Amino acid sequence: MATKASFTELPKSERIKILVGSIIRTILGFLAVIWALSLVPENPDASLWRPIAIVVVAFAVYATFFRRQIRKIENSRYPTVSSLEALILIATMFLAFFASIYIMMSASDPKSFTEPLTHFTAFYFALTVLATVGFGDITPVADGARLACMIQMAIDIVFIAAMIRVVSSAAQKSSAFKAAKAKGSSDPLMTNL
Image 1 (cartoon, rainbow, N blue to C red):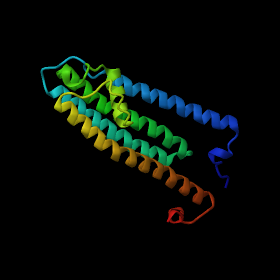
Image 2: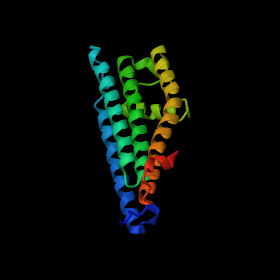
Image 3: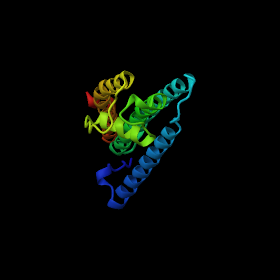
Image 4: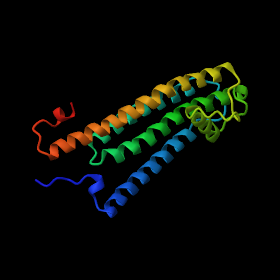
C-alpha cells in the first residue's frame, strides 16, 4: 500500500501549489466576509428587526462555518495548512461580527463613538479591541457602545484561547491519525492517548 507523503516530504513545486491554493482560498474567504460586512446598513433604520436579524444570521453563519472548518481540518490531507487557513477566516468572521454591531450602533446614534463609523473603521476598531492595542483614535463614548466593547473584550480572551486550541487540536489529531494509519496501526486512535 502506497502512503501519501507528508507536506514537508513533498517536492517544493507541490508545496508551493498547495500553499498558493490555500492563500487564494483565504483571500477569497476574506473578501466574502468583507462583502457580507458591507451589507450592514450605515444609515439608521427605524425598525429593530433588521439589526437583530443581521446579528442572529451572522452568528448562525459563523457557527456553521466554524464547524465546517473543523471538519475540513480533520479530513484534510495537510491539516496544518488547513488549520492556518481556518484560523485566519474564523478570526476575520469574528471581527466582522463585532464590526457589524459597531456599525449598527454608530448608525443609530452617531455619538456612540468618538466618530461615526464606516464599515472599514468599524472593522479596524474591532481589530484594535481584539489586539488590545487601543490607539485611542476611536473610542466608545455611549454606555451601549462601551458595553459592546466590554463584551467583545471578554469574549476575545476566551475566543483566542478556544479558537487556537480547537483548531490546533483538530490538526494534531488528524496528523496523528494519518501517521498511525500509514504505519498500519490496527487502532490509530489509541496511538494518540
